[in-house]
Image (cartoon, rainbow, N blue to C red; front, side):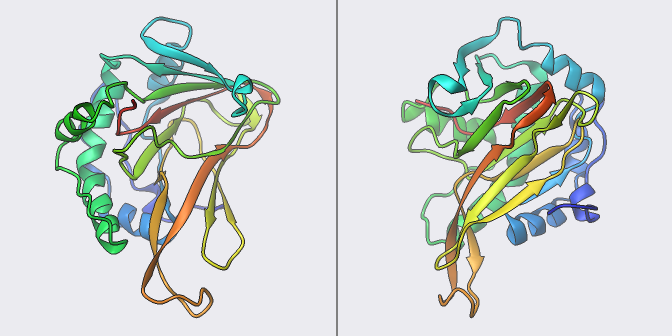
Length: 255
């Protein structure tokens, strides 16, 4: 959704340093409602400006397993790097702390869509499942965009075991560090054309969104009965000026 956010979309406290205890204070039932209704929800100021600058500053250092230049693969323009294990403390802590609140939503969605897979309560158990299936490469990533860069619509799947929700955190400040570069979601429903959502974010804001499919209750307009699946993709529109950094928190590992 665009424009002024609802109370549910602003349901997060600020976090200081590497302390992520405040994640437990997020209004998770409201976040779940936003995810059910729209396929995404926003946590305002999940990270402080200092935390954002610290993470963005990692880009030119070590601690990454691979470096992807999007234009070489037809992914868009810009580049990103996947972190290696061990993850930076803050990234690892966020991944671990957010997962238990999202797992019940993921399980409920799978039940509604008739998918047998269920997710354990803690992230370590899910990562063990990924590693047993050969998905051992960490997927949290740091993205960097300059003027005229963009990210094509895509899905971060990486293997057989996919956690159906992920989080992206904007590390730069729109209007100061860059212009353009909006986070975009598209949703394909049966017998309907794709629908786009532009999600406004400020520095430190995070958007949690569906990786692949989500359940939607049928209506007369769709001509279907019960619950059906819609397919989502996400990307970033063209950056018109400046530089934009984002960190992505993906909960499954890759082959």
